[in-house]
Image 1 (cartoon, rainbow, N blue to C red):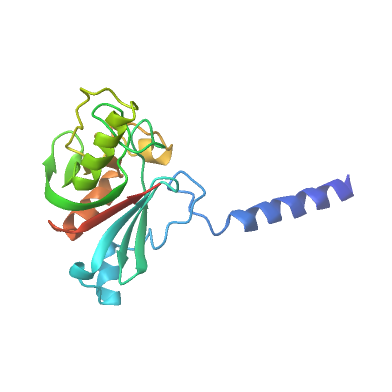
Image 2 (cartoon, rainbow, N blue to C red):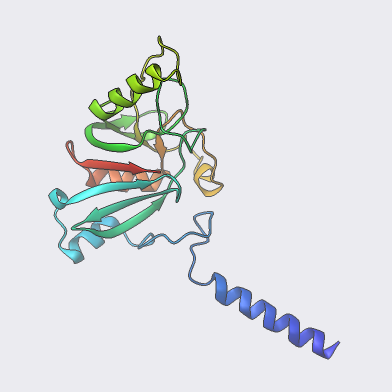
Length: 196
């Protein structure tokens, strides 16, 4: 019994040390750079200009990062459309688009706090859509869709992010506090890059 307790203590210490560098309160064992530091404080301390910043979304990592001068300033946990793997090719496919976009507008939204609208579909999206029609991947009469962007969650629904529930029709979704913070930082014309 004495050896068993020593073994158990070693296993528990090892597990605690292995998990120590990961963020638990965001619902996953993923690294989120500077998540617990306000974006305003980071931008001020690093002397980051908004004009040098962009948004980088990694669908496979379920993260949205603010990047400035090639360096990640802050990373947020996200969820995506209910089909989080494929690239958006048509309206209603519930996929999050991949590519390089520009923010076209931002505004308050009664359903999910704030909405940061980017320019899907853009020229690249139109080309992917046309090619998918040519190859018979989607119907010839399929519409491309639109109104895709970055939003919050419905009221009292941060658990959707914590639990990794992909719930949108193709938008990128953040916790309420995170969308509020990001909304204040972004500007019309800022680049949003979305990768697989």
